Amino acid sequence: MNNDVMIGLEVHAQITYLRTKLFCGCSSNYRENPPNTNVCPVCLGLPGSLPVLNKAALEKAIALSLALNCKISDKLLFVRKHYFYPDLPKNYQISQYDRYGLTPIAVNGEVTIEVDNKVKTIRIRRINIEEDTGRIVYPERSVLGSKYALIDYNRAGVALLEIVTEPDFRSPREARVFLDKLGSILEHLEITDTSLEGALRADANVSVNGGSRIEIKNIGSPKDLEKALNYEIARQLNIIKSGGTIERETRHWIKEKGITVASRVKELEGEYRYFPDPDLPPIPISKGLIELISKSLPELPDSRARRIAKEYGVSDYVASVLVLHKKLCDHFEHSSKVCGNPKLISSLLVNDLLRWVDEAGIPLAVGINRLNTDRLCKLVHYFSNGLISIKLLKDYVRQVVLEDINPEELVSRGLTTIGEEEEIEKVVDDVFKENPKAVSDAIKDPKAINFLVGQVMRKTKGRADPKLVNEIIRRRLAEYGLK
Ligand code: ZN
Ligand code: MN
Figure 1 (cartoon, rainbow, N blue to C red):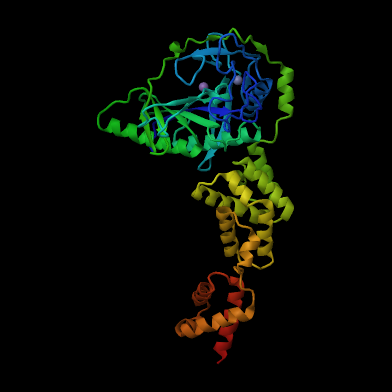
Figure 2 (tube, rainbow, N blue to C red):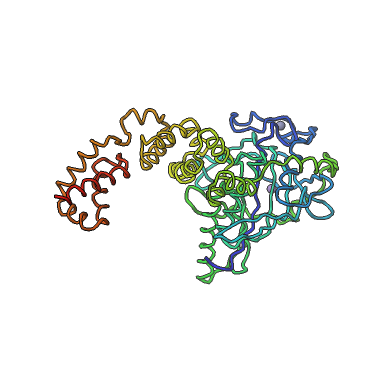
């Protein structure tokens, strides 16, 4: 990766845990409604309608500001940010601004991230409260190749927190780790359910070798953020290498194709014509309110990871992966309390569950539902009672996650570990007959025993308990050796 990469992020997090939109009584859950049914005169910007602030949105914004170590303003000021685009019914967005005596809810925060065992501080420039826009729906799923666009205003007016960082990232990986962590903080604060499509979106500014900044819009996940940045950096380096120059522009991330494409020319700051919204007079933010929220802040990912490592005896690494997803971590703590064995459970969740949902593209919440506490405990129980081997346990976890099967069903299919000694002895005898050379080797050199164990495991399709197989083979070898 080139050393002169500079990346800054502008993240939009929907406050999905609110019941209603930011300035009206429409539901904040717009996802289940038919197009243009979750709307009212306020969020459609009809003449004569007046916005009224949802107070819970302010409280959530203060909680996030505290969690990101920001300096919180003593007043809440809304501005109108003007631009003309069909997803914006009023032709202005109610937002906040940090110049000309105006102020956002919070400024000057910081978050630490850990990449390649190095801790790095990322500065937070500001946090805004603002309203979401409507949704433009392209018939071809993307702006490319679509002959027309449809507009759905159900999302218009949903409360957003905009988090802007300084350009402190030096690699796509750092940006991804930050967005993962921010998502986890938002989950723990019960601000954003990041598993909802479109709930956490990032725009990234990226420049290489001090060239022009390119903005990539609307990236939907931490994973896509890393991909989009990798693509964009390679694209810019290629242009520079072949003698071209990078022009400042806005580009769109096309997830399906894994590329960025040029989109509308970005307005300059002056063109937004920011001014205080006369419909929303300043609201004082008292020290008392900030203190109250500060005292009721829930446990945040960093301290939770430290507690989990200590309380359950899992490694720092495993703890840090668990806290990246609040639901996964909740599941881990609950299941460990119900059936014990936290180390095994953490390993099954971190190494197996996460792997299979990722590979199959299953939402994590669905995977957790399938591998719920009840099923997880049953599987752990089978294993600790010797009914199944560790290999089979992991295989069962895979099947439960991918196919939503009950563990009882897997067991009743007869896929348990062969625990009966006589059964294994018979297989061992067969293997000995088929591999006389390996047997005489193993009598001379105990290290050669592994080959025989492997043969037995293969014949039993991994269902035999390797410890027992080892024991039986050693016993048989001793007998052979005496002959
Ligand atoms: Zn409304
Ligand atoms: Mn914004």
